[in-house]
Image 1 (cartoon, rainbow, N blue to C red):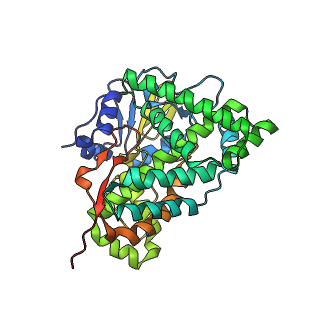
Image 2 (cartoon, rainbow, N blue to C red):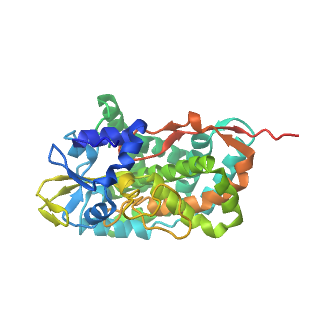
Image 3 (tube, one colour):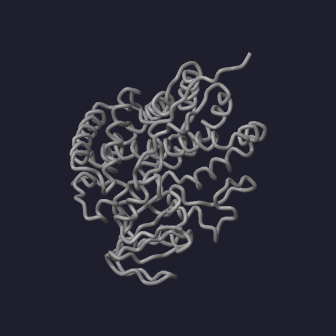
Length: 388
């Protein structure tokens, strides 16, 4: 039987616990709940989609909803896309999007090299393959050396960890220190000049379209969004192929199925499994009126398994691409989603090509425990022994 949450903290606990994964995925059966603490929990697809498209529902971090200090998340003087509303949000997204040139070739080259390594010796798919490939791809996008991107990726991980209301005081302190290092390093880089997106935003600062603090804060935030969503999709992709070996031969024979397969894995696993909002005014919804100031928890992981919307919601459907909320929707749709999709499309053929050369030790995989992001921190591998 599905265990229903009673409060926002209980929702966060369930989302970060692998043992309660089935509970979370079954919440869609009661698509709207008003929790004991006054929060609204939206778990059905239609209710979630409604909330994501309503301008009266503004962005609020999970730590804010849980009453935790937010000083690490909102830096004074820096408007970050995640925490702004129109017209400021529209301005920031326009400037950022104009500089996002997503070339999957650097990612594919680095990923192929990493897969050759784990085919030759024991390794880890995240540390030895995905992380270096993302460093190289983001370095190409940003106009920065891979080594500098690797440092920012580690700092960004601390920042996204602290989105969890359950983060310890030590982790919050570490996130603050990492955030400061990232901001200082990126400020120096922006002033020194670079190519890629960094150069684009430096020119936007020169022209007055952004101020320096905005450029720096959004560059740091973008790295976090790109890493969290892409690692979430690709680790889920690998583990799904391992669980469904028959899919490997089907996908090898029918490349036209790659896109619907990737979208279905995104729907089933949902790299961004929760978004949180707050009502800046009363919202009249089909399911009731949410009052001004109400916290709203939208569980995308559950909405994407809604049996009232999806036929066979717990299986991959390849007959057609089914709309989903794997990266959110509406104004605050995930900025990292285009990267995850492009890099996923580049990764799948390479994984299929190398799949028979290494074994995935799924039982030893380490899941990330986080209420917002679904991913794995480690997936051990070993070369496959070929019988003679």
